[in-house]
Length: 75
Image 1: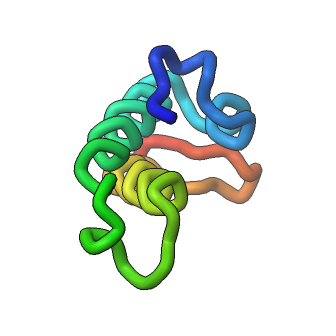
Image 2: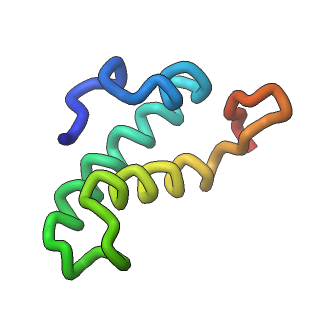
């Protein structure tokens, strides 16, 4: 289920990640959703949604890191 807008992202993203990182997450999730629709393209038995969330978090982690306060901050 791709996201049309950042307001649709899971609460764990909306509540703890800066807006720019939310945009990165949304775009990465949507791209991965399309790229990994074939189960043979995914690792193990991960679902399409699980894979897309993993890719999205990986994209966020390239520019942001989780702080001691539980929120994400630019590196």
